[in-house]
Length: 138
Image 1: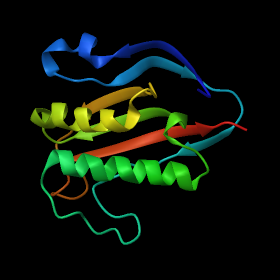
Image 2: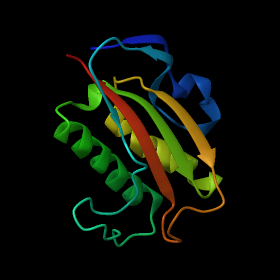
Image 3: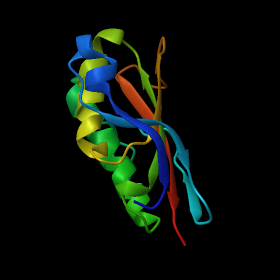
Image 4: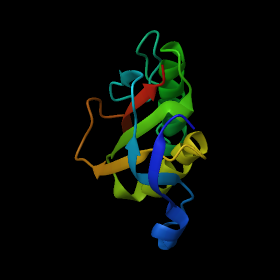
């Protein structure tokens, strides 16, 4: 792994009541490299900004994470270079679905993570938005 991950943990132990299995950590230390600051990714296509045709939090999260993966790869990196995510959801009842789906993309990566429940996102159909930061080593 390119970065030092401090105090790795899995959400199955931290939030046992929520049926989650995400690999996260308390801090990530990076040195050198190229920092990639990702705009908050929403459930829409990167090429034409068309929303996916779904009101399902799982499907929306898959699209969001696919966008994050694609953008990091276009910058010359891979998901292992992801160091931070900030997750915005519009309904706390979607938390498990969103985090479980996100967890499929960050298994073994251990980024730091902040999660917020917000009143609304930029478009009424969006249930989730995730922004991220990656550091691609020299």
